Image (cartoon, rainbow, N blue to C red; front, side):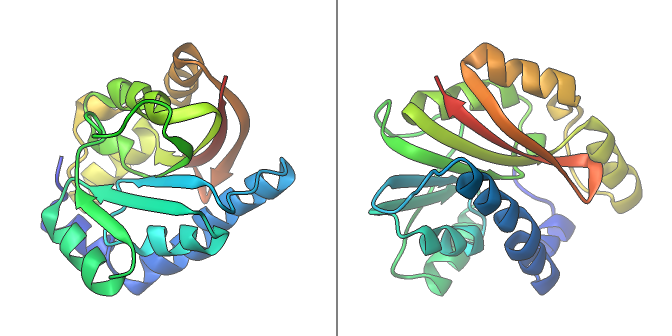
Length: 197
């Protein structure tokens, strides 16, 4: 699902970039450091990369290969202009054009609350990760999505709403072990570190 005009603006402004660097990315870095996971020389994916700001942050880990994609061509256009040295393409997290077991790590910065088939997206993320690979995922639960729909008029489809219990249960049913989860700003936003068993 594509972002509406307001959410596109909210995802492409200095405050969003500040939050991504100083809260979300910092949390993911703390998770990786705590579990001694190094991404140096690894193959890494940024699924739903938006304008590429998150991909540029991930580059700080010095991966051997780093790929970012987003459903919205306008976001990928911005990503390619800002970060011409990185690899970006328009794609769908429900049907990724990658071989199974390709990536050592996959980052997902808040896209599943836009995807009615979010469970299928998690299965596809699992498919492209190598055994022992890590999934770093941050998202909004049902309560946070409903808040943004009601008070900010953002488009979060009700079919994409999930409770944290539903979300964590599906991660585990898919085959992920949840190593870390942390509340971010409010109980409606959490970050997770999972490993593919």
